[in-house]
Image 1 (tube, rainbow, N blue to C red):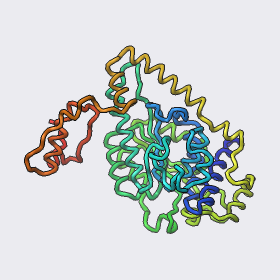
Image 2: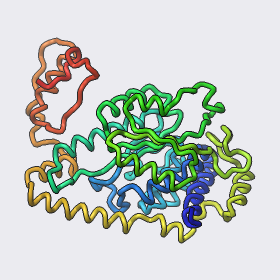
Image 3: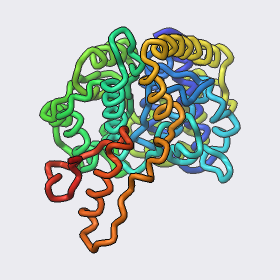
Image 4: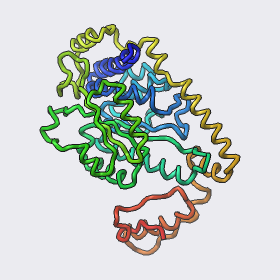
Length: 386
């Protein structure tokens, strides 16, 4: 690992430590352990343009382990997004600032989805990956791949214990949602202690059974191994889970690898000891200039977005009707004109599911972006489009 890469990763770690300490609340350990993963994803893998957060073909990132929100806030700030800025990070978890304890997408445009309830983000990402496949199938044409983004995320032990994650992962495997890659923060620690207090299953074997592509990275600080695993995931046509062995609170001399690093500030003395061990200035919220320049994605992201815009202009020339429909749905987020005129009048008394089915069928032909289904219960809950 280069010195610049190491200091970039340590910048994320120290911002997380300092922000949680300033708030006297939060989770420093997960960001400290996962900082190398975030470095590879944000700085090397994902297509993002900090100057245009709504660019349609950007890659999506889901922090399902939302308690580790400072990992996301630090990464977004260093990538060059307007918000969160350094003042936002200095006021982590404070009223009036968008840096909530768990990421909220209505507070920060760069946050793709609100997360926090464990397992929810796993399902959110599956939905995003399903949306990519639907859009690509409908709009891409030979020589015109205008929908070509992927969904990445970081998930935790707590996420993968939840039923919602299991159900969503099963569906993703069944549908072969190959644009989805999750990195699993396999740190063996919960707030109560070791995960084996209540969780002893073979996670990768379970995801193998779901039909996922699975890999193990034994050292969460090995950037080359993380890069190689993500590249292998991108090349596979199945959804991917990469279990990355990490150390919670990495770098903390007395709390690393323990539950003490999970859900409370490290404390001034431990932060000082950690920075001393890193060879880091004791100044709070320190960001070296060369690290900021190295991690800023603004110029690179703008070029990637402008390349896509040029390709979309060619697509518009070749397929004007499809381009107009794409812009309505995806760029402007508008419903079709007069769609509500198709809504039926429901005067008769009937079960809610019967009325729901009538509405679905009434608007299905008017709102082409409507799609859904039922887990093999359509005949009972009236979700089939006739």
